[in-house]
Length: 334
Image 1: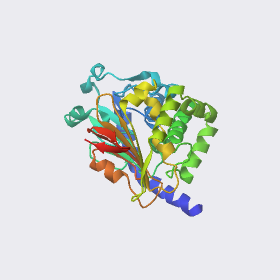
Image 2 (image 1 turned 180 degrees about the vertical axis):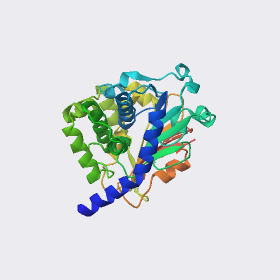
Image 3 (image 1 turned 90 degrees about the vertical axis):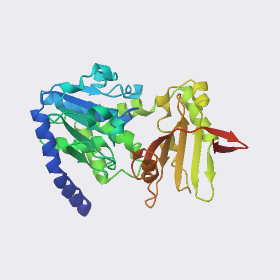
């Protein structure tokens, strides 16, 4: 235990320089744009809400942007209502500092051209726990070992001597719980558990978070989860489980797309498989893919990166523009 804590402390000490560089840029900023990735999950919404609360604490002007609205199960988070989704409402040149939260790559910010062509006075700060894919920030605060981006923000707050309160604590704990499936995923560390414990001390409401984030599935969503399980197949040679949901499956069950979140993690708990692949067709064609593994020797992010996606060693995602049909109980790419 003592050895693990020493390693964690050494890692945080090494990151402290970038924490302080980020804070110096934030302090001198006049107008800040916050951005998180499209189709935001719990960690994305929690991270951007936590950063809004941090900026309010030090009296900074900000605008929070995400291409897609926060899923309804995360609207209980403080400041979630302030996230705007229409890029036309943003005059990019007005901002001297852009803070990317949990995006993983430039493409996931959905501000590709804006950031690529930004002016010299505009600086980008990146807070993330994904493996690095590209360079788009002047100041990078990244910890791929962290269970969530909110875990990175916890260490940022402590390092630069900002204050925790119950609202920030709820955001940080929500990010951790949703990105670890309530501490089930292998990314959960002793440090993660300690941070969660600290957040409870600061007033985070564990029962409320689990109630809002998990106990909210409609009947249609439960039917759709059942359809995903019904479609499940296993490649016996490679021990890869896979399932596919067509767009008609989703529309027939009459549920929101956001209610699909968690299927890959749930099915990834199967015994005696090397990895799980979940593909779901989008309304505009093509498929979103989610991959999971619990094995240390397998890195699903390598395949996701090759397909233009990204993520973590044990949990990654991507998009492929293909047509898939079922013939003779087999799924075929056409």
